Image 1 (spheres, rainbow, N blue to C red):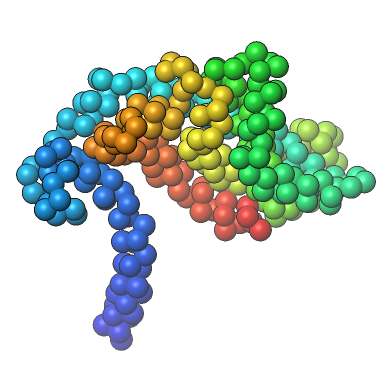
Image 2 (image 1 turned 135 degrees about the horizontal axis):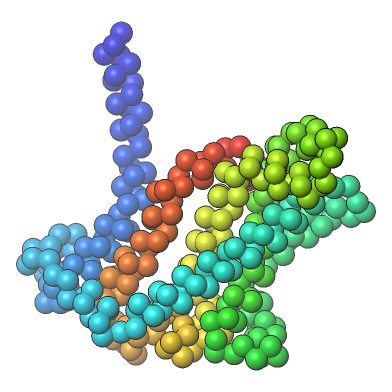
Length: 279
């Protein structure tokens, strides 16, 4: 009986191996490329999935010391943190109102927010460019802080609406019977219960804004204002010359903040998904 259960567990885990390989292969190939020497990297006879001539850190040195990668990363981090925080606050209030309050057109508002999120950024960056110029924020990272919530707020609102609907209304009603206002009930009762959903929305919003490219490319151009996603491509792709080693080094370092966040908040993330955050 024990051996049968063990074999069953091994079989289930073996079925996950192809999916694990599929998910991790891009990171493996990216890291491998960033550690290869140039003479092996551009050798047509070299084995693409192995390092045969020894690893090197010259691509990371070129990225960190010969470009402004650290400045780009600082810009990305600042823009992402501010935009995510602002969008999460606005999205939380909007989602709670749509999930709990009864007013005319509440269903249409919810549908409209979802449709707004589906509008591609390739259609919005031209009118938003006029808004950015009108505000005097052209070629400034603050233009990204202003424009990123245009797609983060609808996303956070839509994500949190489903989660707030899973929180029992009775806990709020009991608080309001004891004298709490609607805002106090939201702050002291609902939000502590909804922490997994909030973390889930924050992680998704952080990932979206960290990886965003079109707005960052359109609204910023100076080397001290651009984000990492734009800076790596603009500095390491020159015409038909691709510095693949440094490009992959930038991709590896750029993925580190996302990996760290998901590792530390994985339990909240899974709880937020399974408890209704995307229902």
